[in-house]
Length: 231
Ligand code: HEM
Image 1 (tube, protein in one colour):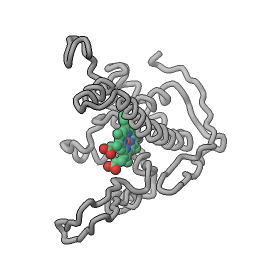
Image 2 (cartoon, helix red, strand yellow; image 1 turned 90 degrees about the horizontal axis):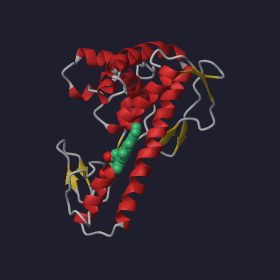
Image 3 (cartoon, helix red, strand yellow; image 1 turned 90 degrees about the vertical axis):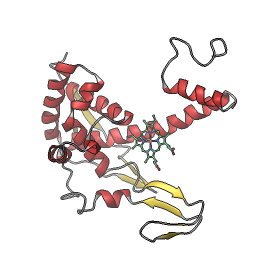
Image 4 (cartoon, protein in one colour; image 1 turned 180 degrees about the horizontal axis):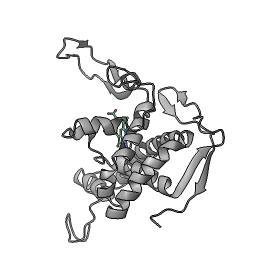
């Protein structure tokens, strides 16, 4: 950037470059780039690995979920390859991952905010300055006003919702980086391995620490390599 200025022909279009541009625009020292990268790593890595592990545990406890997922992934990858377009077509995988997020979110609450000034919501609720506000993620996810049989892990419930409401963009998969990242990893596991727990059919209990909902850190999964039709 010192040599070419703000723009040049093969300037990268990636997160590192966006951060460098922003830090430079704010006239902050370049050490700030490192701080931001570390912060994003912190936000991105434990959330993704915990979410992936939760979903993997559902698969290992219920190997009967594997066949429909594998059929979907193999049929799509044979046509579209391992591409972002292919990820977007994997409705069953999307529903399975989403159900795992519903059943075991990253936290029992979400959207933690502190009111910096007093205000009144449109329904008349008064929020005094300095109040800490959160949304009840777990309670919302297990409310039968929102989900039929919420205590049941139903891997393909969101496929049914989506089929009934095709126009709704909220059901559209693959909008977010994290969704693609998790689906790509899970699709790879599903087509290349059979997975199960030693004690068949039993998913280890989650560990609730403060607000976080973690998969059991000590559970062991058995992986068996299989011949994939995609190889
Ligand atoms: C399944 C994976 C993920 C989950 C469950 C997750 C969950 C969350 C949650 C609950 C918040 C707080 C939202 C709020 O209070 O408004 C958050 C914020 C954030 N996440 Fe993620 N996240 C995931 C993946 C990622 C990835 C992959 C990245 C970066 C590439 C990332 C970067 C961030 C950042 C930077 C924030 C702070 C945003 C802000 O306060 O302005 N997350 N995430």
